[in-house]
Length: 335
Image (tube, rainbow, N blue to C red; front, top):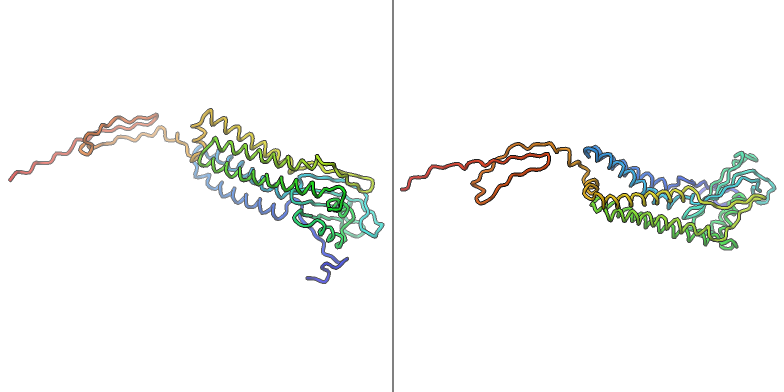
């Protein structure tokens, strides 16, 4: 502990990462290691199946990492405005800055960046994270004690329980239900990969549909915040409202991708069931050795009494069986 901890106005400035936070970075690294490990086995797969397995691994891991990462991103909805605003309480100083509100499933992120960044001999570049897991009232009180800029306090106050907007109820419960359905989609994705590996292709296609359905359910859950009466954020004479952002559209694209994969898999399973099953099993071309000839073989019929031997033929393969005469042994003289 240092002498300025929790003592106003000497407080440590919090700088929380906005897009690439710790949880998100960990998820990306885990999936990258998994992708490298799976791609290292590609040289052991012969023929044209190698390219198919490469695309299969990349697309499957892309869907998985997106589903997990969407739980921890803070840009499902965003709002930005550039305005002149009072900088701190008990001060008449007005700064020109870009104010941003970024909404995720587990909290909000409020940014304040000066234009220019250095004004009044101070660097104006704030990035504050407020989570639904903690009491928003306590976080608001801590922000007041730290002396955060007025625009950040104004936006955070809109999410407190005493705010007439009631944003905390809309965003918190919508985020929780959206996160729950996303984790369900992740479980469906795992089951789909297991079924592809068995392979049970038809049901794997159905599970891809289920994955897409739960992704769409998460989007519908989050979209309920737009159906509720919108609370307008006003900074001086400027106002702004939240709109869908990158994570929402990425979830939509991933859901559409899962739907298309499910449709293709189910259609191909009905049209060419044997070929599609062979493509997902083993990864070894069964046609590479079509022209192989096994030469001649010999059978000793002494050990095959009463057994009928029929010629064995197959497309592109020949096998000749010849019966070798049984050896003759001299009879022993009877005593």
